[in-house]
Structures are given as C-alpha cells and as structure tokens.
Image (cartoon, rainbow, N blue to C red; front, top):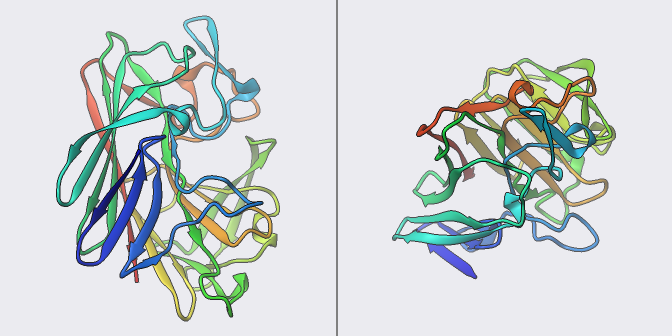
Length: 283
C-alpha cells in the first residue's frame, strides 16, 4: 500500500513495503531516484538491523551463529501505517521473514514535512531483557545529473565543516585496514565516475552535520543527527547518487564476527528507546 503526504512545498509517497520513500517532490518536481532499469532497483531503503555487509554474511551472539543479508531485512519487510496526520506518517515494522535476529524490539519510521524539508526519524525500542545490538542507516538516491544538459562532473558534494575526509576502503563489501585521506577543494568533493570506482566512499571521523549536492543550477542538502559514518555511492554510469547517514558500518575484514563488539554497533539497554534522524531539503 502507498501513502502520500503533502504541504505547501513538498509531496512524498511511502510504501508499506520497507516503509520506503518512493518519491520526493518539491513544487511538483521529483528529486528522488526513479528506479529506472537497468540500474539500482530501490529508491531510499532503510538499513536495519545492520548496515553494509557482515563477514561471511553471519555474526556470533553468545556463541551461536546467525546469518543476515547485506543491509539487513527491514527494507524487504512489511510495515503498517500506525499514524497519519496532516504533516506526519508513522510506520511500524510488523512482519519479517527473518529468524536470524533473536531479539525483541519495536522499530518505527516517521516521515514529517515542514517548510524546511522532509525529515525521517528511525525509532528503535528494546523490548527484551538483554542489550539490543543493531546498526541503522539511510540509503536515499537522488537524480544526478538533474538537468538533461548537465553531466556528472558538473556536481560536487559540499561539506559543512570539513576540509579533508577520512575514507576507509572496501574489499568485497568489507572494510579493509586501509584509510585514505581526501583533500577537499574549499570543502567541496567533485563528482566523477572514477571517484566511485572502488565502491562506496565510507567516511568516518567527520565534523560536518550536513552535506549538500550541488551544481551551478541545483542544490539539495542532507542534514543528520550525529551519525557516526557517512556513505556516498553511485552505481557505474547510473544517473543518481546516494547520500547515506549511517549509525553503524560494515564488518572489517579482520572482525571476529561477535556482534556485541562490532565496529559502530549500537547497544540499547532493556526498555531503552532511541531516535535517529536525517532531513532532506531541496534548494
């Protein structure tokens, strides 16, 4: 089922499958990736209860092994809309096909509209009696280049507060032990196919609370709530880019697979609840 939400500037559509944002319009113009073949067949999935890939697609918890697919299962799971207001849609995860995440929890995704943009809030609540380990992240794709007469090289990411970026390289979806320092040009990282040749840019230890996607004619900003990692990705030759605030990250190649000591893992105490949010603003 598809739900819609509108105000005087923005209009969004959200599916109950994965509670995924399907479109993001400002003044009647859509800015979200359209899932056009033969490229990436998602729009803006949620990454939960892991971000990225596990070593061997598995993890250990109290000596027992469990398997999870890359980015977890929430993006392919059923949600229900439990609240519908003039400026808000609230979805709750109600059904998964996974038996490999042996924890009790509630997971909500809230979409809110304002004059500033579209805000997405993830809420995780531990309903069990032991600490809940999880990672969570966003994966929205934006049309880029946006105008027919533009090319990818006309665009850049503009960081709010960073002069250099710390990138950890990936191999087969896992973090390596190799870091790369990227020097920005006046806080700008210019786009090219070569930039993404070695998979996504996994950025850590940054100061910025936002990053903008810009050209001379285009501007879009993603602002976040203290995310610990940032993913920047595009599929080869595809006309979109992804800006991904993450509270968690893929396994390292040398990780022992114990989820309780996984890099970037969140540990939520019994009965504890925590929100994670990011906001998209156009122009």
